[in-house]
Image 1: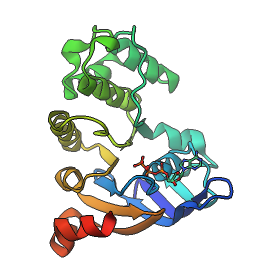
Image 2: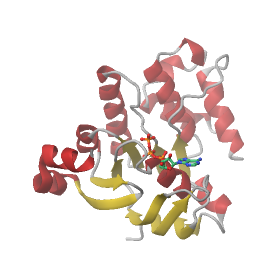
Image 3: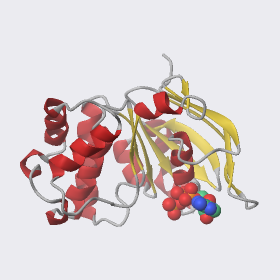
Length: 235
Ligand code: ATP
């Protein structure tokens, strides 16, 4: 099976500083959920941003659906949905309009039947006419996911989907990811929390100081290292 994302010897150095990414190679298969686990400043956001074509690498290549993210940006970008760490929504717009608008930005023809499916899968259909400023933090994050899915991408990137949220909201996000998994969406997410990676992901990649230390199936990694040792090694 050809991987949906192929990362080959990717490095990134901001200016003349240290390497935020250092020779990272990684493949992601369709339908899989991969968690990138690492402490502050490890390089998680840089890796996601470089894969998505928002940051240019110092060296190395990324292919999404076989398209080089630098050389064939438009084709690759169509296959990508990105949910950034910060919540930025137009406060006075209705949920449904936000999602329609994002779909339009991709040049896609309107498809309200598909958008209904997306909103229902995120338990947002009943809120479709609410203004985004009226929503709870958890719902706002779900609107961001709906926007990221609006053009039917093949792979969804979630950058710290539970950053700064309480335990209840974290659990809610885990359920959302589980629902997306059932629908066959390929997901790459970043997190600081081992238990979260363990809960959601098929494979876990541990990243620290710009290096991908290891990538393993979740059960194998937990069996081999155990929670305590992995956390001690990381932090
Ligand atoms: P966090 O969990 O805190 O979001 P992270 O693992 O996502 O961290 P990055 O944000 O990718 O890590 O940062 C990796 C390194 O690159 C850090 O040392 C950071 O200071 C540096 N860095 C990130 N963005 C820039 C930038 N635009 N200019 C200069 N240095 C940057």
